[in-house]
Length: 323
Image (cartoon, rainbow, N blue to C red; front, side, top):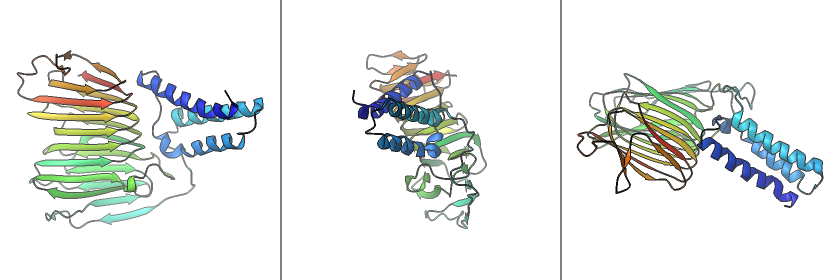
């Protein structure tokens, strides 16, 4: 192999080996590092270009060391969120909408962002029976487990107000969009937890959720809520969902690239899984595969309330467990 092919080849081998080991549970790393340590990729490419025509042993060793060291820092470095690319940076942004009781269907939000922290709130209205939350953004950590007397609440730790929150009424469904502005991922900042979002929902409405995420660490405990549907589209990352007892029909749609996906369902829930997962590995505890290729829990056909899970992906690790 020519030396000018050495580093690109090593990068591909390392990336492939990392995801294989991660999918089989032998590795764990910090996805949020991608948001703040991405300049290391520029360093790796720059060193390779500078030494591209140097075929000496020391140059090869240096190129390999930079690539291996850079990946090790990005994937396994635990900085507890204390990554600072620009010293003494801070910002302040405040926007409070006075339209919280506006029922005209116009977009509005109540947002406060101060010094790397944001608060997003939407008041609860008894008239809201069905609510939909659309979440979009990558290179972030998302957590949902607590309840709130608001309809929706999110606390963020991000840089320069990367998130925006809009609401509207669509027929009988109250819709909320929570997303990164311009789909921006990563950034420079002095935040203590880069792109971390902690959400809470009200337990009264029935919920529909759409999640579009890239390299994301997501853990949603939905067991306290009435869930009509979840549509999760993810890239590389870790995705964990915990459901409660299904409604008459609860649908969960999951599509992922190179990800570790875990769905935890109640032990007595009637559930059917449709799998279209290519080279991915599947672990479905307590399910029986039917003649049509679907996996079902015992007594699924006779159950009154049913949970339907459809999963698809290329090289992910999908698991459905009972609790």
